[in-house]
Image (cartoon, rainbow, N blue to C red):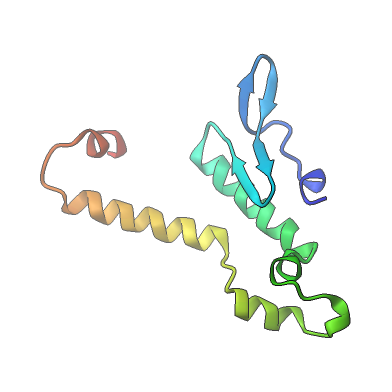
Length: 111
């Protein structure tokens, strides 16, 4: 239900004229994109849409009959904002690369 509400038709990898933007099997999801910034936006859209549909309730097994507030569930699951996580990881990687003295291929690419 969550993926039907996402507008990802232009996102993803192009295979024979068709865009492949995600694969899902059981509880696993793999998201594809040619651009890392676009991928970050896709994750944020997925996170927003999941929270609208109560994915936290599904993950924890709590139903509405249990009368547990969504804020309480979010505190126990500790779901994070994907934009904040990506930004933090980018800065950590940048700091790591700046501290590196050797001329590695990854440093040449990122600068």
